[in-house]
Image (cartoon, rainbow, N blue to C red):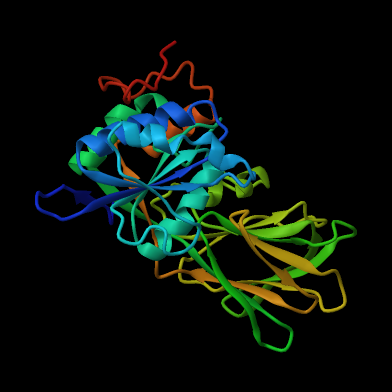
Length: 333
């Protein structure tokens, strides 16, 4: 187990058990995956809560609740909100990375562990693929899994007069970007109350190690192993010769200040929660005291996940002489 992880073992007589499923309806695999979950929940007396993460008006029609109940599950639909996961044992995200981030919005305030089942394309945040749902559910029902804490960020928008505009959080990143998409956003980056660099850019990302493989990676930031604790600062399309990514201490206070006479900005957390940043305002970011509790089913190292999800070329790798390769990931020449 990694540092800070905890082993979960289900105990008999624990009381009512509830799993929350956050499903991206409209995907081909969602119906059979939900049915597999319903069968095991019904067979083991586990209540199934359901939240649709699709925003289409007809999204609910894509989930046949009556069919899930025919399979023996007690199914309750719940509305979006911080209380959706209260009293639950685990949150299961069915979809891609966007659905996982949606599920994390429910799991984080309730301090409930979350697991992603990939129904999308890359699904970097997912722990398993839809084809292994029966094995995953057996492990969840038996409590045979570990939980790892993933670092999150507290994000505060502060006006030019020092008043708080908004307080929110991020698992992947907060992006401070040009609100109008015209011209250049002039910003000053700051670490621990001291200015670091002023430049024009499309924006600036402040990310966690978990978020280093998402938007920050596309903007030119480094990949960081998720058990690291650090804050990553990545300028996005900076109009400057020396605006480079920075990795700061997890104890640092990072700020992005928007020039008083320049463009307005918007701060977006995980692509989901946003707030206006007027000229002269700033976005302050610190490590949160509350983590997202991440369910791990297998012991696949992050290196193997990186190679698999990004389809990295490793042909020719032989490994250290006399030692076997990792679990099926190395391809020998």
